[in-house]
Image (cartoon, rainbow, N blue to C red; front, side, top):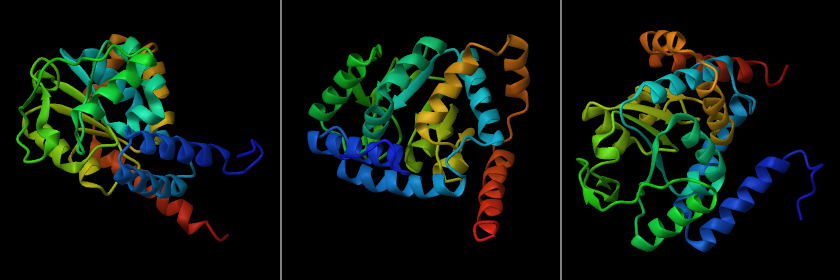
Length: 243
């Protein structure tokens, strides 16, 4: 039993949840490794939302609100950790929610969709086709969903699909704690923050920002600067770690 006074309470509860969902087949075993890697980078930013991440989250809200056909792409880790937060964000911005998996089986897709629905998400689950220019199962998506989307939010993404979506002319918002990853460097906008902190910030911003601010944020998107700021925050924290 994990007691609430444990200094790593939130982290340990998150790990247990992922392990339980891995046993159930919703999270892939490889997804546990991916989570651990992200958690290591979260240590480096002090497990907090930095000013740069907060700006990125407000910009993400603007991109979703101004999009013609926004889509939130969900994998197993995202569903396990933040199904409720996805529901809130969908209601705030009106995006479609579509499941897309690297380790794909029809049963796993169904389980993740059911988990999302149980949390109040309106899941878009039409007929999937191999529509993205990828050789693996991330290529499967819905023609009226991700294939025709102009803005795609991809939490906890793999680099291949991020690059493919950008190559198709889509604006891609990534949530990635590693500012050096291919995903982070390929995305139109990268939020270097932990998933369950980032999604509520985007939802909150959707209800706050005016049309004028939305347009200003879109005009000033500079992903290179945001990634540089994230690396600077990590470097500063490391330089003071033993002070």
